[in-house]
Image (spheres, rainbow, N blue to C red):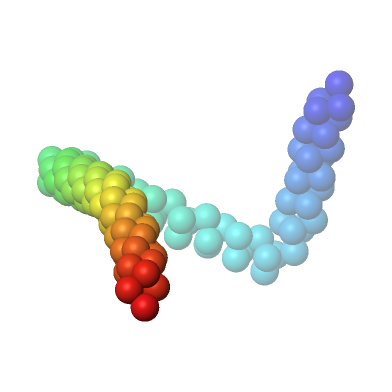
Length: 121
């Protein structure tokens, strides 16, 4: 019900506004000239499209194919980056684990050396 009232209000307001604008002769003349210009431009566009339909369709197809190729390549690049990140994560974890193990081994060797030196002294 509210939409109906809104639409009626828009139509009535538009009609009143159009009537007021068209009362003034210079405004009416400008509106008519602008409508003619728009009509001519629209006709020219329609004529251009109808005369060059196959070329336009071909260009749209080519553009669509290019966009599809770019999207496909971007997807492949993202997949490669994701694989490399996973590889780096795995290798980083292995390197950290190896470094911790080496640290522990060196710490144990140092303790053993100190113990042996303490026993010799």
